Length: 218
Length: 218
DNA sequence: ATCCGGCGTTTGTGATCACAAGCTGAGCGC
DNA sequence: GCGCTCAGCTTGTGATCACAAACGCCGGAT
Image 1 (cartoon, rainbow over the protein chains, first blue to last red):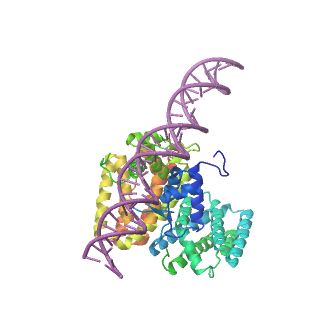
Image 2: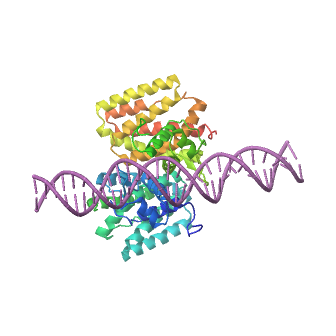
Image 3: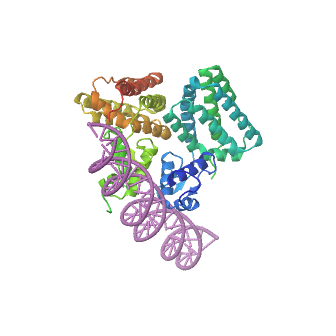
């Protein structure tokens, strides 16, 4: 296996595959994983699979039971509220730091991304919507040049991934308001307070929806 | 090796040992680690050592070079500023959430801890000071019942650990003001705004000291 | 004296194996 | 019919080994 399409060490590949899967909601809350299963699926031995799984567990993206069993975490409403609060703290700050560095090209790019998100929304493609939404936020926050803060935010996204999937699978995406437009306007106008508010609302909405719609289904 | 004093799986023990070492500043920024070294030191094979090291790397407590070499991270001033900002966001929130649940017994305990910290400060015992300081914060934040937020805060502490050591080793601990007393007073008075302010100042002070005192020494 | 090339050694990576603990389900007894 | 028990299998854990890449040192050329 000298070259099989992806770069980097094997454990890194496993990590990326699982991470994408979790982030985009392809994994249901409570769903179990086995090391041998993951390893076999990618044609590797257990060793790199274990490293990737433990790394994700360290980030809170996977839960490990007392006996070492691995599964996607099932979030309690309190936990969801907590994660929403963290996002509401970190992400407005990230947006505010990106504000002074936001050139027109970035704003244009965000506008295009938002249009595509809308398309997915109306088309009912939940997976593409979630993916686009995260990409929108990450694109904006990258301009903040605050890697540690961004990493923390992504950690939180990772933790909410499986539950978001369960949410959209159950209730559809009918009533998602779009705060992205408000955020883009504030960004273009250089209005920091407005930007912070728009991001905070955007973040809150997704997760309060999650709380109000009851507990996770297994 | 059926029983050697500590509980849990081997990789967990390694993790805890290394984590404590980093958190309490027993490791200099840039200092290198080898898997075989860690494993040998604890009388284990490389496998659990690798898991523990990678876990800490995932939390930002250790840095891995492109070729897999492991070392304590060397922080740039920008990075320190960023970490300080994160602490200034998360920790006042944690304190505020702990406020309504803070009984007299907790306040008493914090007072005692602060007195001991002062003792270490005057005695010049930097390691004990750092340890006591972290314990003070953790004790308070535990009352917030916000495990995800606390975990994020601890992640940041972990990242600043080695650099803090370098700081106190170089400049001593002469001019650390004590915001702990202000925090305790605000806590006792139920003054949320005052508590938030005191914690923010406490957090800022340590890390701005780190910035102003120049780059890390190897 | 300094810089560069080459080699031995160190170090991380991944596969395989032995083992113990946990889970599952079938069969028995009440 | 319901619950318990025990055997078999699944699963995570940790050790060991083979291998390749990176590091560091030493000697020679300029």
